[in-house]
Image (cartoon, rainbow, N blue to C red; front, top):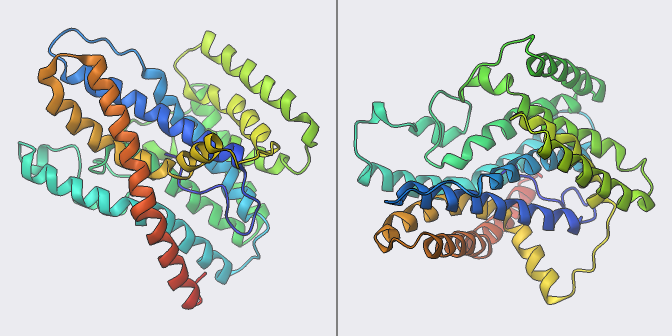
Length: 343
């Protein structure tokens, strides 16, 4: 998911097309995990049919790079602005995440067999989301480790924009060497594998789109969108397994979305915008729901019925979590920090 920032921060106009895009990307990830869970728990041969849903994550990474620069590039320099930025990022990532991660950790401690040393998650990784050998209880949270690394890099912008761009340039060149096979890539979730994973280039494609958005006329939006879709189709047709090839087409689509104005007053658009606003909650909440429902309903031996139930319940759980918990809690937390002079 990348997907931690919203598309309205720092007083910027809300970009409804990108909000809807976030919702579509979140539902793609849900579809992928419903397919994965129903395949895994099926007693019959159950081939994966919706692995393409995993690429919703690539859209989130590109969008995250775009939103961070779009909303914060004009922030003043200095420690006070950097502190406000950090508080916003910490609230956005951790406040909705911790309750779900802790509840699921309690369930795993109660029902998951085997000693702690053999489990693929750790308490410390669950608490911090920092890149470690073992991950969070929420398997989808691996993306948040990448988000955190990119957000940390952007802190250099509060020293100087040149410092941020210089450090980004060094990282980009190194990752291009990794893509070319000149530099090594380490596997895993610890710090070095995260730093050497070419998927990080997706953030920087979003950064490029953010710097371009004010220089591109609104009249180009259809051409940008068509070019993005065409290049995305080309990347799929010539697929080599390198996900970073999706980033430039997705950056063009994000740029087109940023130039598109949507009337959000119709019932359908309001629903689509709500799903977009709830995309982070959907991303976090659906995984344990889908896993539990697929396991419980496995005796039905009706994969597609179970798939549909998993999709509906997983998506609905995220929307409910957003409306009843994430949104009011974020509102109260921001108000408290503003009254304390931290935002």
